[in-house]
Structure formats: structure tokens, C-alpha cells
Image (cartoon, rainbow, N blue to C red):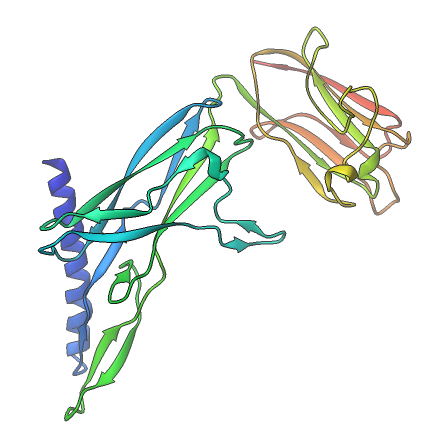
Length: 297
């Protein structure tokens, strides 16, 4: 009953939007045509917290403005559009860890169809995104929140008829984050002009290394971050480290012995944070290493 009510409200909203625009146009002597909309559900984002390698499925809905006498099938597309600097894809979750059906079907006589997405929480680091949209097809407008119209003068009439243009494809974003029942700790390092000299490690109360970066495989020599593709003055941000309460020691190293100091105007910095709480920080000329001990609740 609840789903029927929600579906009714959604369709009522669509029709009300169309009527309102039509009424406005009628005041100027024109009308809207071509009311054939398909839209993904709102809200347009969902967030999932998963344990490492945990798998889930989630159901999403697609709505149309009118029921058909036959089944209607619409394409689903994983959005890989690049944006930003450096350019990153809209979908950052590895394709090995999600399943998205190629299409979604709205049964004959119905106004809503459902599709199921599968997600596995593997290699998600500080968080990943899966963005799914509807493919465009001839004669169907995707989305209803905003659209533009084109005035067309039909034969023998001086009054324009406004035909709805194709609008931007609506999308759903599935945000995937690592589930942590303890403390989410993140390491961030802004390098000076010598990222090849920088390394770090995080140790527990027994001084066992639980996380590190910038070392060789054996962990006994600094290889730095230039070899990992980090440029001068770039920034490294670690994934979330899920740490139980206790004492920890963070140490940052410089292979040359002048810390992260290049000049009076170029100096590297680092922070270790629990949310907005700074657990360790520093930078500049700290010599061969700088060590900070902190306690997590």
C-alpha cells in the first residue's frame, strides 16, 4: 500500500508539473506537447558502508508518465564520464566489484519498474562511487526536474506549439565506503619538491607496522613517492585505516635528512586525522625523521 501511495504521488507530481507549465504557456497562446518522460527515483544518491569483501544488492526504481499496453524496456548505462583535474571518471568503483543490468523493464499497465544493482566492498579505500544513468532513446525524454522547449509553428497557425526537448539524463550515485566499527584514521602528505625522499609508517603499541608508504617490499629502504607517480608538491591521501582503541606511533622519514624542506617558499606538510581531529602533524625541516605517539579511544 505504501509503494502504491508513493507511485501515485510521483505521477501526480509529474502531471502537476506539466499542467502548470501548460497553463503558463496557454496564457501566451501556446501549449506543450510530447509528454513522454522516464525518470530514475529520488533521492538520486545512496550510501552503503560495507566490510571488506562484503557483498550487497540494492533495488532502485524507474518511473514513466504513462502506462503502456506492452512492456517497455529502457537501457541502463554506467557513467564513466571524465571530469576534474586530474581527470577522474564519474564511476570510480572497479567494474569487478559491481553488477548493473543492461536494461530495466516497466511491465505493461504499470508506471514503475525496478532493477537490482550488486556491490562488493573490495578495494574501496577512502570511498568509491558507482554512477548509473538511463540511456536516451528516440521519443522519450529522460528526467522531469528541468527541461527546455522549442516553439514550432504548425501549418496555418500563428501560435507556436512548444515541443519538449531532450533533457540531461538523470542518474543515481551509489556511494560505497568502508564500514568501520572502530576509528577511521587517514594519513595525508603534501610533498615538497622531492617526493622520492619521503616515507612513513604507523605502528601499534607493540611497535608492529600496521601501515606504511614509500618503502621497498622488504620495508628496509626508502623508495619514496616519485616512483609511485607523485609529482613535486602533489598530495597523497591514504585510504581509511580502521583502528581499535589504543596507542599508536606515526613516523615520517626523509631519506636526505632535511625533512620536507626545499626552500623558504616550498615546504611539505603532513597530517594524521581521526575525522576532524588532528592526531599528528608537522613538516618542514625535521631532519631524518619525525615521530608522534597518540592514543585512540
